[in-house]
Length: 257
Length: 263
Ligand SMILES: Nc1ncnc2c1ncn2[C@@H]1O[C@H](COP(=O)(O)OP(=O)(O)O)[C@@H](O)[C@H]1O
Ligand SMILES: [Mg+2]
Image (cartoon, helix red, strand yellow):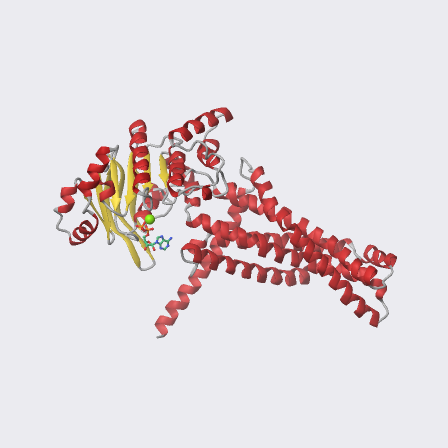
């Protein structure tokens, strides 16, 4: 079985608005898949379906062959424990410091002794370049720093599947590069499968093994930029023409990193 | 026309059933969270500080002036029938049975309840609850139940302080500024207030505390699901205003009903 996550005839509606319309798609194990689509197309909703935070109106979402939308709380938590998630705004807990946020998965989900927690958090703070900010609260951090804390927290329990919701939206190019560098480095170390949601293609194509374009309720999968440019689907053509202008340019940029 | 009307009112009825159901489940989950382990004692203490301690200056201020006004009004009313001597009893009973619990709960709603609602609403929009769920951390045990316990601890204590300060305020205006006999004032309190009166006040303050935290926390937690709550900061502010209004109405309704049943 080479698909880590499979959508089978997934339909998701809000009232009369159809966000996903009988979507069938597979996410390959060990690969990096990018879901690209305009804003409001249902990218975050797709991630929430994968995490079991929302249920589809019909169809199945299989994680390692198990339908996550029909699990009880206990089983669901078991499946979720293999996920790490970087939410769109970082989703750090406001009332807790950077240190406490990073330590949270360890203090709540493991039985590590205090000094082991401290050792691991200290290590993560170094790795994610957060030393000196331990005692700050999320509201005192810049956007890029919040994302780094979120990434550190998501990776604390060494997940096998990472989900990123617009990891670089709103960040300047330099910080975007920092985040991608951390992504590459940690993926190499931990070997997770990853799903990255993005509202455009150019910034991410060079790190994607597969790109899924989400538009008007359907998902179309591509394996290379050429495939997208040669697509005859009118919606894909429109999305590509709007956002793919700089693909090769930014590939070159990434090489230089 | 009729068809559209039925459809609209049907949808509205469904929404309200759903809304009540949600709030009911919220209360159950919060109750269960109070007993889940590990218990977050430090978070509860932090909340007692936010809800209780930070409201203290306001409660003392309001309590004192409420007592002053009661002493003043009570004095001139009682003097007409020559009964100034029972001013202490009048002030104490008014505070213990009615004004203490009600005004304290209303103040806590405005000060801490609104903050709680906005905080949880913002946490919802910034996906903090989603993050907790993904880490398999129960948001009720972790965040919401400590607020419930802290409110249930703080509001009765604040009510007690309100009453004591209020009785002192009545003393200041009735005895010190006007000419009620100090012995008569104190004696009226001791002989006039029964344990049934105190019990009624205590029951009210617990009931109001539960209303405050249930409605305010619940509306904030469900900000995404509330009709015309909508998204973003505007949605949070709308839902917070709504929560304060609902809580205030609920407190006054319950005040009447509890009084009618328990008196
Ligand atoms: N809880 C919800 N209730 C109602 N509508 C929602 C909800 N969550 C998302 N939507 C709607 O679904 C659509 C897709 O949202 P989302 O997945 O957040 O978009 P994006 O692709 O920008 O991440 C949007 O039109 C949004 O308004
Ligand atoms: Mg989104």
